[in-house]
Image 1 (cartoon, rainbow over the protein chains, first blue to last red):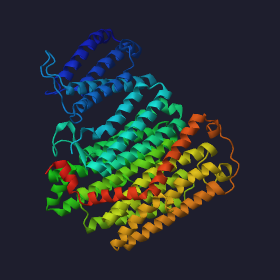
Image 2: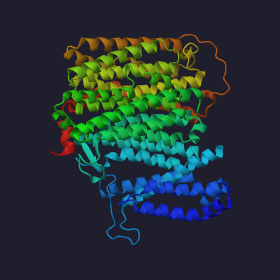
Image 3: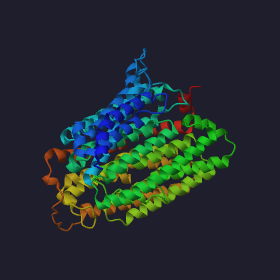
Image 4: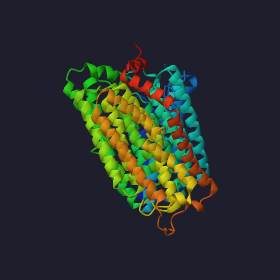
Length: 136
Length: 502
């Protein structure tokens, strides 16, 4: 898989796919998409990059170990679920900001939950794939 | 009463697991977080039980969706009591793990998974939604699968294959049963189901669904004839893991059975006869299985099965007193079985083997330690006034009231079998003069452990033994709770009112 075309394309594909994964993450509340699919897409971006350039290079551009994203994502999801408890509401109740944010739309705890899922999925997928390919 | 904070035991365990994942590389910090977290969980669960006992059933509608549309979490006395027991066993095993679990296992995430398992258990006890119960069961299976195989020894993998196959099968059956139930009633909320199932005219279909639930939960709680995965797998992982498995995993199945067969499916004569027959065979096969085993952990594994039979018999008799007995026995069993597996681990640390034939002379060498180990062993047998006695007493009283002499006979027979097995174990391990055992190189013996680790192992056994003694000597308090729980189970109006309003 070391053809020049693939190598060159992978450099441009990485930011494009990452942007697209964030787009999918954000539109997921009412339309098809969401944290899980977005996360998978983002990890595919890194996997394509690692196919073309080798795992070491992908790890270098990531600068943190993907496994670290798991607790970060879980914490974000848990915090967004537990936040209503501080207002005397039930666990996982959706809290929303009154005014919509431009581009993103209305922001609520659901968005942070989804972002948490997004990070966990990237963390898990990349950890699994990197661990397996290191063993090869 | 609405109370959003009843999910705290669940959330706290997840939070501990996340903190543990952040400190992945430092084993000492992980140990500290795990023990402190378990202590906090114990305090929270105790407060929850006190609150529920004083103020009645507390509920929480997840996400603010009203029942029966959303997922309801219900803390009645039964749930709160079991959450408390989970927290107690969790604390003990967490402390015990500090002393006994090898660094290699900690490096592969032993502690985070352990707390995820405790989270799953607390969630299963607190949920009031049958599908959500299934989800918690899955969390329990997945984390227990990881714990079982962590370390990757050959025996572990072999045990794990049987364990996972049977438990996945049970999950499929459970899920099918839920699907049929949903098709029949259009609801998943257990309180709502209780009302709707009673209205269904096609009783044959209801009975079939009930049997499917019985089989699903039966495999999970290791009843006859589907128990063989348990003795095949529970003796393979490190003792800390067998302790939490032996203490709590099968008991979730018993909890689910007690809940489902008092709330949703009220057993008719046919169903209660089936439950009773299964209970009798479970007592027999567990007791007789334990007789011929040589490995002490296998003996305890079979005894788990035997004693699951007791609780099932209590359910089969189906009177307030018998169910109160089953609940008392459940309380006693969780503490004692957890403790026994920890004891077996300690014996291993001294002697380097689990084989009864090779063990011996323990009493002469370590008299104080033997005295400590005698507490859980004799509690298990149920010598009055130790904790095992009271549960059986209630169950036998209940069975006599219903003039169900068959169950009385088999409970007494099961008790005698247990007595015989423990007496044999006591004489083999503690009294007889054992052969000199060769030192094995790969085992870290008790004397080679750091003082803190030794204290952790012995301390957790002392802690659970004290609780066992507390259950035995404070039987009045536990009995009041069990009878209250049994009354609420037999007459679920309070539960239904709390969840659905009027």
